Length: 295
Length: 260
Image 1 (spheres, each protein chain N blue to C red):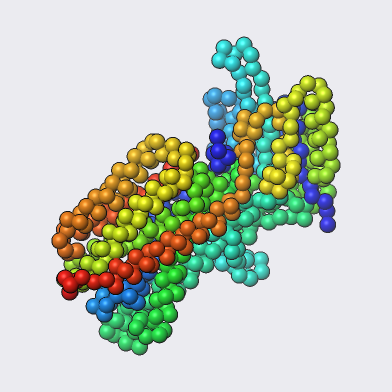
Image 2: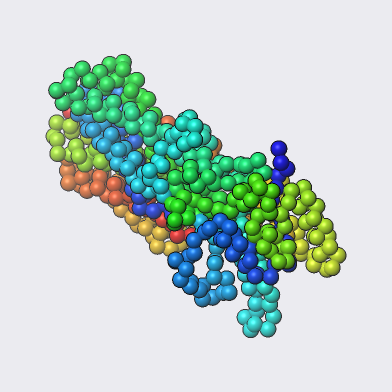
């Protein structure tokens, strides 16, 4: 029996699963929005604005979920400051320590871009410099986008840097969560943008983006199973069925087919595909977290 | 600076009396399970079952019996935190609550821990868990308070057969090696030391004399540090970010005529 099977589960359950899901959406919506701002057309600005408007409130929810999950929530600040000396608490080799700082840094950029996005609405014009195309806006978008990439993937590395079965038996969970965060975030933007006809150009580009990302997700998941080797047998149960039918079938294959059928990103097929991608992304985190917790 | 201190547990003389469990609970004022209501396992004489936040010592009863019950043996082992020289829990702890003491032991400071539970999954031996009373992760401290006062840890003090030996690691290794040789001389060729050398996590400051495979005692055959996955996991994630960035660039830059 592999040595990882002699360990105990850390009791990371629904609050952590929700954090992994919403953290993926917060970081993903931000980096997709920054890509739209930096690489897209001027007509894509409203779509990017939607991404920034989603990212900041979602990362606030993430913070609340993480604090609520602690055994001693009132000591959450011990992650950032040493309680005895008040010096900064940072361990570069601890993913959770880095993640706590990453969440704070990302939250800062998400807040600035959120203000910039609100300014785009018209009332607070001076704050519009917080969004591209100006230099300050570009710097914020690039650094915030990088922080977003970190936020969506460190959670997978965090699981790998344990001694638990499945989690620590592969090094691909960070990449899997990153690709899944991209697919779910694009899906959320497609879903929320699909009522606005004037966004159709950007939505078409996002739809193509999502289809490629879904194929990448399929490949990363296959690589994950291969990397587990004979240990993948632990998924020969209900969790494995949920992974194949829920995550791969409903969350990747069916949305790919629906996107291929959809004539426009405003169609009901495209909207259904987006909903299924979001469901698949959530189920992926459920399977990864709970299948190891159950051992 | 004091010498590294620890435990050497000779499982061949453990009689399963659980005096160590009781002494540990009493000294450390650990609460009872389920408020003291009897909780029987139903399939073993071992009703503690495992180490956790309120059981820092656990006497394992390994019951090796033939199906017809004609032949068999009991293996008993008083399990505890291994106080690894390279400790996985200490590596991952994000608050700095887990420290290495002047005795080279590993201690969780309960007033610093915020109950994130990262250390629970990181421990290769499944030693740590949450104490429901404090809401923090807890485990054996090797009686740090008693050691500071020059006393023997409560479990070793209470052990009636000296299965649990306490002392400097140097002395304990000599004693353990002599015992292995004595057992080999008596025909018990399966006796060996688990965790005494530096190959296992730099050495376990709580090591064992066993007479069967580690797995039989519920011990991992090849415990590893959680940080072994840090570099590769980060690199794969970075590669994923680059790929998504390139795909995004291509998707958003390459527009078709009907993209309006």
